[in-house]
Length: 591
Image (tube, rainbow, N blue to C red; front, side, top):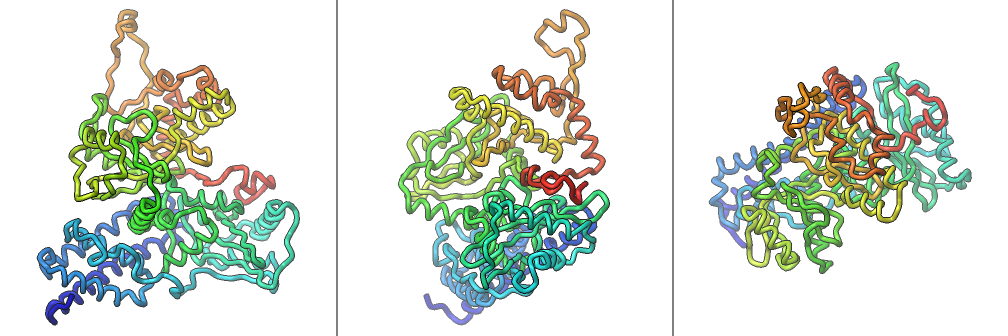
């Protein structure tokens, strides 16, 4: 659509303002991520956790700032369609040699969606599909480094991998840990080391991945046509030196490092698409959307997730249905059987036992993004004004949505528009898992998953999170058999709660009255009461008492609170303890 010279100058100026807004965002994002190396070297664990929290609003802050600037300078809300179309064309031109074009396109969409009405959200105005390729973007420093064992030898090459990160702390015994890696590789390969091909090389991502108290080195060995992925966590010993804790050689276990139930990584990346493509080569089961999210680029993760969802809808025919399980009092949950996610909508009216409102629920879900989820809380993707084909919803689900959350429903042609929506990975509800195990007589499964459930509660407590509602239905079982919490409307910081023992009754009449003879405030918690609603069968009771009896005692909770208040940050290993070198070889830097 042709436009006049003056309008074209406005379109060009808008494109420049948008690029400047994005560049400012990514510069701040990268500065924060780059400081993770120094925080790791100096063991500033609490500062690292705070930096992850501080980084989360960076994107929305810059979008808001850029939107306000466009409205103030160009009266953006009243510009013609042609101006916006040409602004997009100018913007594409500015991204030709950009290092983060996919992120910049998403930034353009975010600003435009704040200014334009939803009916404008199509190809002419926003980037429905990527317009600029992310392939072969050069990075300085390069995305990954290469080492050549045929020339330098395996020991020297692997040793150099870790030396090249240039950490300001010395290693406890790097030669010993390199030997552990080589011995682990030999065991992993069944004792048979393949012949060295001419192209044998070790490729390692240039920046380490920082989270909690660890730095993770990720890479792969290439030998002939076969690639061998690996991840090595680097930790601090009690003496302040560095040591390699283990080597993870299974792609599935490496993928778990990027589970949405973990805290986001801090990684200094000039070209994030290069990192994502490399990670995809070593974790092929992980969608790009989740990798972007776990690298701290949540908006890009949401953009790619929604593109994947729309693509899936075009290539499937099943319908959204009410999710199986016990209906929640706060959330209406639905799913698409052919897609491994659940969709959650906040109800307009909550159950009578719930003392929260919509704003409180949203704050709780935002809180989950800001803490170290230690592999025990499912992260959620939060969306606004999601348009989905109405004919893909079952009638039962449509009826439930209009009954339970009518304020969030809107129709636009053939689409059903949900004004606010959470999406998270689908898991099997723990109560259904236990019921199935009981029916099939799998006592071993009951014991394992009850132990996992107790571990989840413990680890959340150590991470300063009290779930609030501990019912089995609020926890799920992942495909790896891990128990994860996913109902957040009652979560609290551990340090805000008051864990008490129930005082003895003053007399027999008080004990028999059925009424509490002691005062109770909103944040009072009586662990003795957990047994009443958790021990729903003798087998569950036996398993819980065997593994986690102390969770019924206020002392466990009070002791955990004291450790948190002292500033102690515990280790959380996103891999089995049995893989740690100190457990495999009986010694190591952690001893």
